[in-house]
Image 1 (tube, one colour):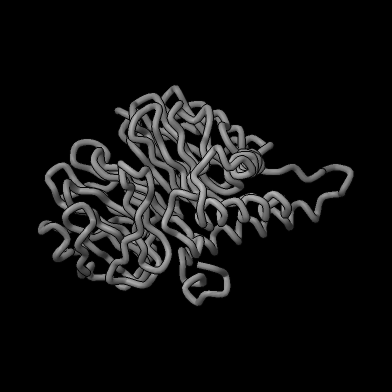
Image 2: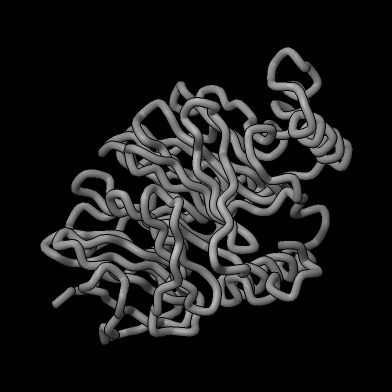
Length: 368
């Protein structure tokens, strides 16, 4: 999805507007400060500012880390709770970039990613974080990798990735990363705009570009990655899903019955669900080889989904809707919440509850 595409304006409307407003406020503050008092510093070099309101300001993703809950959001805010969401503590974060995704393969080790191409790692369950990657380093790694044909496969995809790497390096650009997923404490992927994808096998100490290992000649954005133990999927623009071929070590494109943007993925056994704009919800059977449209009961963008312990599926939307399905996504019924808000993420909590994040921060919701 490019800025000239009509769908670009609809994508994550509330989230994008929120980010633009936040950045506009920051720019006004900068311009109203004397130049000798405040020099510009990149968000990747400025630690997140402490705030007593960190848990009630916009948060964009949430995850379980053992018995702890961890959420990430704007300006590098990361908060965690050890009492089932009753209270929240702000983590120590070395960047003030907007963070949009988080993954915890174990209770202690977790990763977060977001704008300016940042990847952060924690080894203590989310209390303190270190930067492993940013846009400048990612561009350097990519340019070096694709400048050496011996480091990757040859052919059209390699040449395309090489041209993109040169262009990004020449422009000094930093591509946003939009999702991250680790299957264990060592192996994981991070994905983002314009076919951006990196893989690590050493817990993020080193990252290898995989831009030549995707069936994505148009360099569509990747918005989500999901690993379920058997399959690894990507989802993005124009209704596209990709599944990793474990033999070829390549993401193979799968066209779904939908042509709009897909924001996320949810794996449930042999089935995988893809969701996105205008309430679009799809189910892929047999490891994503057979797709069908489902009725989510909403026309709002679906921004998060999770499978409950009893097998039910919960979805949340950017319009503040909370819906539950008891029949594998065939039908959804609304769940009324006390303080609905535009939602951006959801995860299972404890005792049959769910934790949701959105424009007003983080909330715990009881599920009947």
